[in-house]
Image (cartoon, rainbow over the protein chains, first blue to last red):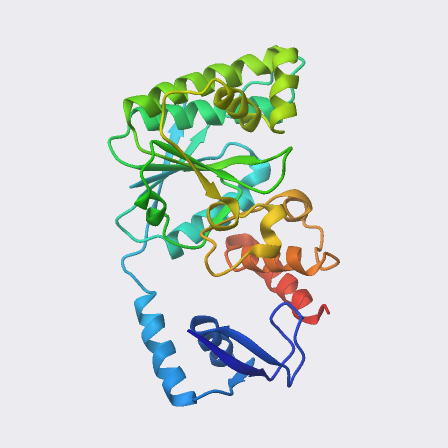
Length: 72
Length: 246
């Protein structure tokens, strides 16, 4: 699912200016909105709920751990 | 499933740390992840360290595959893991490698996916054999590099010409091993970002990369999300530079 966002600050690798509208995935949208870089244009409530669900689904736990092995 | 990477160069410490951070953040906990830290290979007279190091790394990959009883991903440590690698094994193959749209460097062997079948083990033995041979056989080296530039890639290209008895699969670099030539296609589908070229040089030498075109900045920004430890202060400065760059 993709949504439209209106940028509030310069960001996203410097490509957007405040006021620009970008088309973006729900997950990335949730991240940009949470740090105040953008605001939702489309159906905010549904989008926020979907994004929240998506972020929960993206958090499998526990995470991988790296085992370091010396080698001769 | 198991993931194996090899690191032995101090110059790669920053890249290794970022790889480790990305693995911890983005791979599920049921995947066994091993970082092999051998002594640096002895320099060999007349041979460049790039080739010797890569040959040594390939031997370690071969040993892990031969001793594994489960699916295994062998990957270069100058990569960032962005998503679960298990779906690569949804296809039926003994060994999978990644390809890009470039006739002279079609294969990038920085990430391979293997099922430890007898055919895979025999394939790895032959790959190591050819890889070792091209270190000193300049004619064969030249032939291999004409097929596909690089050390492990040249020997793999030579091996593929022998039509080995194995079920191989070619996976797209843009998803499974996003090298510099694919950075403009870098997307949410990308599972592995391979830090190459000028960006890698900048990371190792601490040169500021904000003069790069947008697709390199995009890859750099992804790397800096995982740049950790003693570099974190510098990391913040870099990210600031990206936000200001237009």
